[in-house]
Image 1: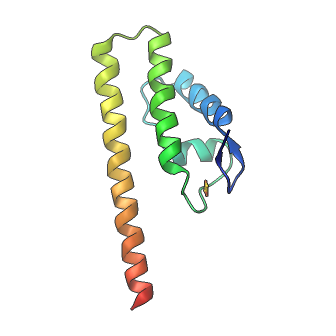
Image 2 (image 1 turned 90 degrees about the vertical axis):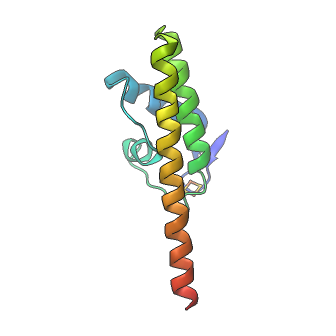
Length: 105
Ligand code: FES
């Protein structure tokens, strides 16, 4: 399934990069930017980022479940990832809104 139509990136490619990153550091905070940088790609329209974030969350949770990481460590970590992504997404939307307002003025 194609997740990023601008770069023609498939879901399994993204999952593979996330797994490779987690093998290097299982507790790192992975963002769409980190994933795309690892693939030597970059977000263009960034419309795929919400889906990439969902893939990051699901893949990270699955990775830790396979490692049998205890729930008391997985759950706060996944919550931290979701919160950080929501914070970034809000900042991105505010920046986009401000750019549109400036270009309309
Ligand atoms: S759809 Fe991924 S950058 Fe546009």
